[in-house]
Image (tube, rainbow, N blue to C red; front, top):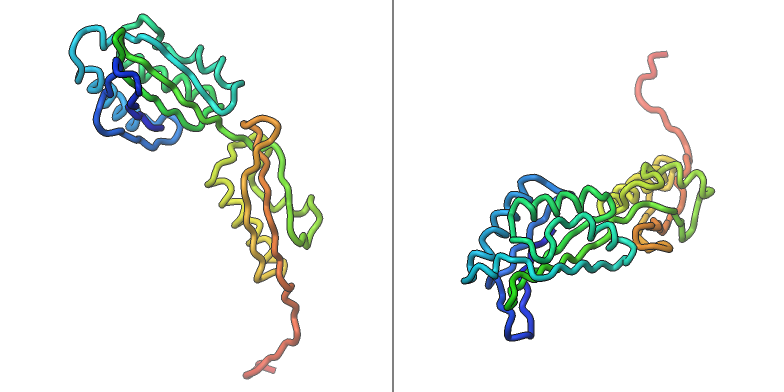
Length: 219
């Protein structure tokens, strides 16, 4: 999550703070939300006049248009409301509770009639399908069984790395000691449906050449 004051070309609008504040959190982390609330409380107070605490407009944008209707309902701060830290905190919790949002960026500026809030939402990607490319040493079903991520689960960078490691280890256990696996996340028919694409370079399979026993066999 990032809370970023934003400059506007319109001379009537003033920047709320001189430096942006970025807060990284995992879906609604309480300490991070508290820090956001503290920062959000300070920003309107930097301006003069009671109108600056009034919310003049709320905008919601996302790379996936299908996300915006439910997000608008989750945002409790509405035009005409008085800016309130607790309400902002509740809005963030509501947005993450939808389960379809991975990141929220709030851009805040002040205008002649009060605060202008812009919520920029990034959708949460979930696994929809898996593709295997490269030189596949196994059938797709066996490759898929080596992965732990199931359809519908969150597909992010961490999950991608975990699946790369699992498949590479499974190949090594089967004799492909030099196997390399690299992956990427591909957008499905909607931004929240992610396709996990894994490219496999198995290398030569190690084979047992000979067995040699030395020392006292105890016979």
